[in-house]
Length: 172
Image 1 (cartoon, rainbow, N blue to C red):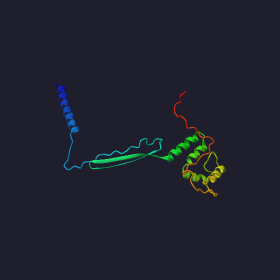
Image 2 (tube, helix red, strand yellow):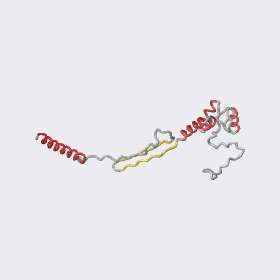
Image 3 (tube, one colour):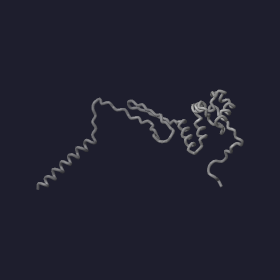
Image 4 (tube, one colour):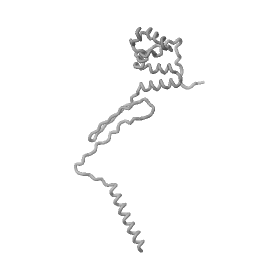
């Protein structure tokens, strides 16, 4: 008899607790003159963050009251791309090509001249490269840079024009 009474009382208590918890989870409390929180304004996420890409995200947002706006853009980092391409060329054993890739940056070009190891031009390195830069009017007799070769396209000496024919899958 006592065990039956205990089970009945336990069932009533558990039912009351469940009812109280259900009532608390669905009720909202509103106070008079309570300030309304502004809506959240999500801005563009850094897609690819902490990965090996050369893209920088610039984003921002503003909100107030009931209105908010946000926006963002992806910006390519050309210097990062140049460094990665140069590293890939160096890993393939193409050290001169890797150096030429970095020499597209005017700062690297000037530092290479100042160090006495000029950037390669038409496969020429060292003193031959300095002579070629002087012949083209890029360097003066004291190895001062007169004009940057990266501002005007350098025309490479090629015997035959390269055919730019069909690209894609072979048809044969």
